Amino acid sequence: MASSNFRLILSLIMVISLSSIHGSSAARNLLQTSQPPLPTIPPLPKATLPPMPAVPNLPTATLPPLPSNPTLPKPTLPPMPAVPKVALPPLPATPLPTMPSIPTIPTTVPSFPFLSPPPSN
Image 1 (cartoon, rainbow, N blue to C red):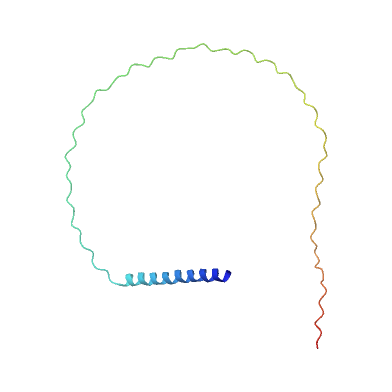
Image 2 (spheres, rainbow, N blue to C red; image 1 turned 90 degrees about the horizontal axis):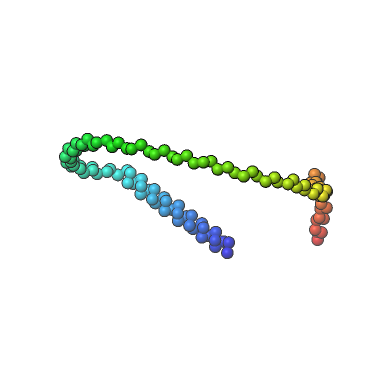
């Protein structure tokens, strides 16, 4: 199964690389050929616009003065009621849990017993 996936991916990479080689050689061929002269475009006639009409002088409008805001009486708030002092009960003294110790990494490599060679016949 893994080899068929590998073959599929390898064949896709080969197809993409070969198609890019073909495209780049075609582009090089187009760059190396001489280009035909471009046709001349006739000049377009200039558009003539009629002159803009003169803007008439409009009379300036005079606005009446804005009315002043009426003065309103300031409301008075009633006094705030006194808040009684509340004493909180003391918190129970709970001991903190102990932190587990960090295991140490051994610095020596243990020795493994070597296997004896097979008997020779």
